[in-house]
Length: 523
Length: 62
Image (cartoon, rainbow over all chains, first blue to last red; front, top):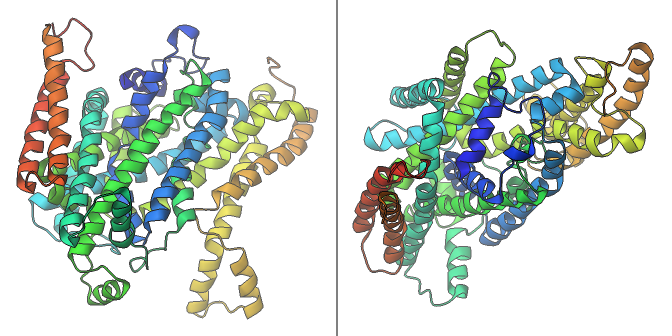
């Protein structure tokens, strides 16, 4: 079922087979709702889900915040697919890249490809890290801990190197085989994820001697023991309801608000088929995250870290348990759990490396795809050696969405608003230009604005701590008022991108229309 | 009954073998080692039986 979409998707990814790559998908190739349900459920039950659930607990979430925050945040994500992506996808029926090329021009799309490829590399790196934690169960070597930034042992480096090499070679040679394995593994993997949560729940019940006779008893256990809230682990940001909600909404921002799923949903017979994304959200980003978080919560409980004072003491003594999916999964479900960690990381890292390779190949089309995919896998493997990538996965995922989001705003405004404002849609194609500066300004300007809001304050603090800079208290207070954490900045960022694109296009189209003859005026 | 249907039934049983042991563990009926071994057996059966029908055209496994 899900193969239909993924095969079509990989077909459009390929730059050589040319299947509807530069033309709308015809009616005969459209797919039904079932195809999208399977695809979304499989795609969003990945190795990284294990890490994200664990990091929620490390961020000190409470039961209400994590459960209700995920319900609301995932609903907002589904609505974003439904309201923003699908209506354009089912009207234009073009790939993201072709749609962007018409608006932005080939050179700006090349830059977008580069950004996309780099982000895919790091994402694949995090998946390799997750898989490598499973190796540590079978072969004894020092594993990374929560706040490790650099590789902490030769054994860890060799484990990542081994896993990364296998994944990269397979991605370069046999993408289709892995795609098939991923489809076969998906239903089994979903149930193993569920089993993680069920086993952890029983372990909590036994360890606390709780009597569960009603939903109220279960909620009491969840809110006082499993997700008890309190302080985050040292070095982590405290997650509130808003953090969880915005994270769940924006963790796939590149796909919905950023419009990457135009390439997928263009095959949908009806726009409302985007509701299929709820299968991915509530299986992968609700059930799987909660299950994984319960595994780590139980590890902390078992170690006696059931209050803030104990956590602080353990942190000072350096005895905090490491949040590693491999050992946690093995403890709950044995070898089947371990296989799940490897398969979840492998089957999702593989297409990610493959797509990163395609994005890079678009920049250097004369190089062989095999060599570029191997090189991409090599970069992802080196990135995976640094545990900071996985341990700071929440921040990275938020950054990933932020970087690609402005182009989604550009597409949305171009498609729905430009005609009403008397501006010309698909301007790069019509004016025959290879770099639409209005879209470029919207992208770079939005990123500069958002990153300044996120990082200016911490950067000034860092400079002040080293005596490089000294600001008055009133200036610092002013800067602090504008500081926004990375989880929240994308929402105002979308409106900044939209306004920048409209204003810049007003100026740019007037200027270039006066100097450049239009190449095409086809509507 | 076709061979394809037989493989499908085996796969469904393997899926049941993947999740039901943990439910039995939750109910206090079995111990964790039994859960882990049953899940491993179900995993082996799933990956052995499912490729024989999933993603193949009807008739290929008949």
